[in-house]
Image: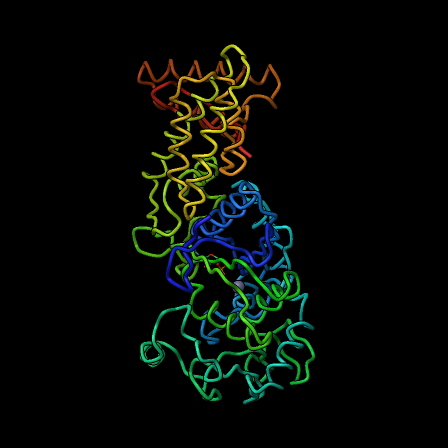
Length: 467
Ligand code: AMP
Ligand code: ZN
């Protein structure tokens, strides 16, 4: 497999530390609000990566954190704690906020067919590990105490700027312009490893430590969890491009200083999902969630399909028009696949199956070229092999794509309900023909209230049972 490595800025052949095994760490959500569909673009890319590695025969150990403590509203250790901000906004405790949004996150992951990583760990459950790391960093001279907090001294790391590819001078200019300086630090880019109450008086989640009652910095949690569950050598670390600096840069600094050797070989970053105003972000107030898409009648899989049509390293602009286009294409795809099931069953042509699956894995092994992989799927459908062979190929492709390509819409509903829906669709078509649009809309709404989502395409009206 070939992947683009942010560390070397090159496409490289992927060779894991241990043959056949991939240790993969992916930064998880900060559970102070719903994740937006931009966040999910990144989780979809990571899901495809994990499933591709699996398809190529690797055993994948994947770990993800849940940030329930210590992430500031600014990445530069300033501003409010995000969790505390969420708790104040909703008049709940930070624990209630964390539980509620963690559950919402899992629900959305399931709706988007994102496999849950084998290990998902809350940041607040690994305080001892962070303390162990910080103690060693202090002992070895990589960290210092100032104003009650413990900071990492970035001057002790020679290649601190390697991942971001930015020069020290560029960053110094940036820091003067936008970051409120913490006067306790020796260098403005030194980052917090442990904060005490002296910095955030009203912090609720706090723990005893050798440096006083306080809580860990944001970056240390990912290093601590990764080192605990994946050991000293990491093969792949992922996130979106905003994680490159400072989060991943700081993870490298503290992990390698702690270990005394190189830590992670491949750093992979997904590009942003933007809307017409720029990067989709929670700080902008209004943001799009998976449940909002569902409320508007979209199957979340359509959003997954929309993402897979573009490369993870290209920015993707979201609009409802673009999503509608993806929806129509997806519906047509499903329609074609469903019609294959009606054809006569014949023996699977294994040589043809191998050929298409090989092309499919080659596309994915080329730095996750999902749109080429989808082209192989269309080529399969267009080919003249038996319908049974096509279905067998699609079944394997869908292990990675996870687009519910073979799902029978109607399999889980009883016959009388099915009849009722079909009757309503007929009535609606009739109403539309007679230009009784209000009546037609009323029928659509009536069905939607029963969780039945109608889709009009050139091939006719289809329906889907929502989740
Ligand atoms: P957060 O919950 O803010 O820590 O973000 C979760 C993940 O989503 C991180 O890996 C971010 O880098 C990523 N992310 C944030 N905004 C976007 C966006 N607009 N498009 C794609 N990924 C994003
Ligand atoms: Zn992280």
